[in-house]
Length: 471
Ligand code: NDP
Image (cartoon, rainbow, N blue to C red; front, side):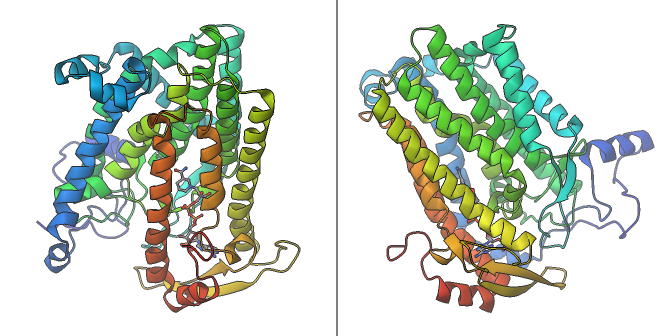
C-alpha cells in the first residue's frame, strides 16, 4: 500500500500513464511536485485514531451539513424563513418536492462566476507573495491582486447590473436555491477528486493522508494544491466564496429594490457586509497566514465549506431579509451601522498589529509604544529551525484571540436587521460563535505544538483565550 516516491529533483514520473503528452498534460493541469506521490504514514500512526474521530464525526458532519444546505433554502422560499412553520406545515413528500432543483441557469451562474474569478486572479497584475513556511518548509505562492479584483468585480456589477441591466443580477435571489443544490452536486465529487490528486499527484511535499477514507476526505490531503497553475485555496476561499458573498448580497438588495422598496434593514446589512468583505480583500495577504490557510487541508471541511456552507449558513440573514424586510427608523439604522463599523475597525486593527509587528521585525509602534515581543523558535517537519515573533502588545496583550470579539460584534450588527422572532437568520451568528470558540482551542493546540515553551510563556503573560477574566 505504501506509495513509492519518485527520486528527489527528477522530473515527475506519472505511473501508469503511457503517453508522454498525457503525462505532460496531467503535469500542467494537476501541477504535481517533483517528489511524487504522498506516502502513507506508518501503520502505528493510523491505528492511533479512535473510531469516532476516524469514521463517526466525518460521516455525521457530512450528512448534517448537506441536510442543512437543503433545509435553509426550502425554509426561506416556502416558509417565510420560519423553521417553526417548516416543522409544523411540511411533510416529507412536500419537502422533497420543494428542494430546489439543479438547473442550467444555476450551473451557468456557478461556473461562469468561477471562470471570471479564476481569470481575474490569473490576469490582473499583482505582486507574487509567499505564505508562511509549511511544516515541510515550503512557501506557498499567491498573487496579491485581491483588492483590484474586488474593485473590478464590483464596478462590473454596477455597470452590467443596475446601471444597464445587461445582466439581470437581481434574478440571483430566485435562483440561489438551485445554485446551492448545483454547488453541492459539484463540490462533493470535487472533494473526492482533490483527495485522489493529493494522494497521487500532490502539488507540494505537505500532502498527508491516513488511509482512512472518511477522515482523509473530510480533512483533506493537500495543504496547498494547485490546478492549472492557480492556487486552489486562493481561488475558492477568497475569490469564489468571499467575493461571491459580497456580490450576491448586492444582487439580493437589487432584487428587493426591483420588487418593492429597499428596506433600511437591508441597507445596513448589505453595507456592513460589503465593507467587511472589502476589508477582507484589503487584508487578503494577512489571510494567507490564518488557520484556514496554514493549517486546514483542502478537503470537504474547507472546500465544501466555502462552496456550499458559506452560501447557505453565512448567507442566512441576508437570504431571509430579502422577503422579510425590516423598516427601521434612520436613527436605529445609523446606530447599528456605527457600532458595526467600529467593530470592523477594531477587528482590522487587531489583525494588522500582528501583521505589521512581524513584517517589521518589531520595529514599529503599537498603541504609541515599541511592542513587547516573544522571539520564538520552532522546528519544521524537515528538522530545520526557524524563528518567529509573538506579539505581546496592543490587542494581543488583552487576550490571545481578542480579534474574535469584534468579529462576533460585527456579525451581530448585520444580523440584527433580520426578524428577531426567526431563528434562521441567526444561523450564521450561532455558527460563528461556536466556530470561534473551537478555533481558539484548535489554534492554541497548534501553537503549543509549534512553539512549545515560547507559547507557554505567551499563555502565562496573556492567560485568556478570547474574553479577559471569562474565557
Ligand atoms: P488569528 O488571527 O487568531 O491568528 C492565529 C495565528 O496567528 C496563530 O496560529 C499564529 O500563527 C499567529 N499568532 C498567534 N498569536 C500571535 C501573537 N501573539 N503574535 C503574532 N502571531 C500570533 O487566526 P484566525 O485565522 O482564526 O483569524 C484571522 C481573522 O479571520 C480574524 O479577523 C478573525 O476574526 C477572522 N475569522 C473569520 C471567520 C469567519 O468565518 N467569519 C472565521 C475565523 C476567523 P503562526 O503559526 O503564524 O505563529
